[in-house]
Length: 298
Image (tube, rainbow, N blue to C red):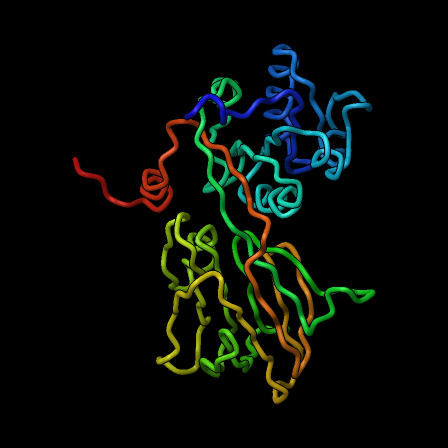
């Protein structure tokens, strides 16, 4: 890396999963280590209030975004998804420590937390930018009760009731693509291609490509297949008026909205990106082999 482009870190923020014992233990290990190294530390208040952290260091996520040079996220991929949606507005790099299950986004193991974080802070890291999507239902982003959210992994349309098929039409750049009757649709980024989309039969997409995938869930016809399109495309989903019940729209499985008959879901690529830092030995394909149990040559 060109030394002139190397990041400098003085104020470091910490986010994580509140009320989770293992996360709390790792946060305190990291916190004590960074204090010894003389960094200024701020911890998201929802996490810090149950830990032995001074009140003046407990701040809102907005303050983390405004004051920090780096935010370290301790938890699973869900914690990173939450942090990425909030911090992307502030153009702040994120570093993940895995205390969850898979850990596609949080790639530092807890037993190496001090060693690997020290390497990154010393400038020994890889940088990566990944894009997000944003979804808006029926143009009410600026209403009093907006149905609008960002998504790092995926945007999912699904029935409001169990075992109910829904019908919808898909348009790409204002061109009609197809009608679907089934259990819904997953619109996934490359980051989300190894999440819900993968279990539904969608393709794995390298994070470096500028594409999204549309994956129908249990379609009523075998001709409805996953497709990948340019991420700059405008995707509109019209929830058919003939549906008997409302549907739901989920962003990263964390933000949900109702979708009513005849409404349109507008999905676009977001301008602001997620900025990730990885340890220098990070290898995406090694991560896939490990997490997905791919074979290795003996």
